[in-house]
Length: 139
Image 1 (spheres, rainbow, N blue to C red):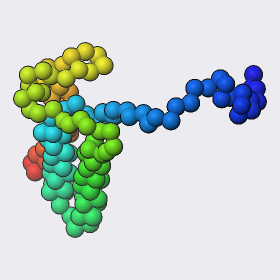
Image 2: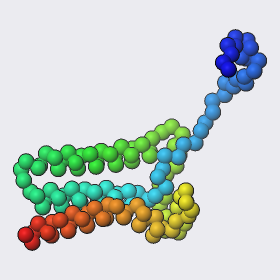
Image 3: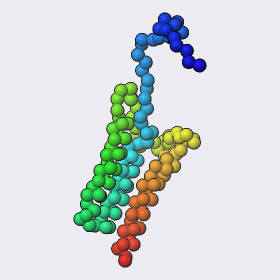
Image 4: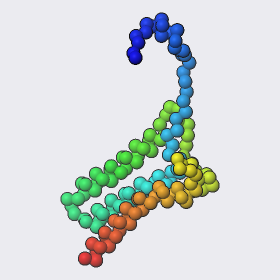
């Protein structure tokens, strides 16, 4: 049930602190920047291959828009990971990543397993674009 309390009654019950509470925020993705850049490069490679395969002046604007979405989407996430305040984390270096791997919700992954998980979709999409380009070139 809801009960109305006066400020005096609320102050008797509640503990009020005026000291600022500093929380540590981890906006880091837990992966080295190289994997992040590789993901962006593979998505942009897909757009480039498809734009080159179906080269048409009418497709120039959509290709630029798609590439812009990829660049801005990943750029915004990268900017968010570096935002302040209370964000004193930094991405893993490549040597830290290869030595220790990463911890996920389902357990620890080695660097190779984590790289495969992160890059499998962009690689498959880029390979798909290359297959489509090959089919178009052969017909």
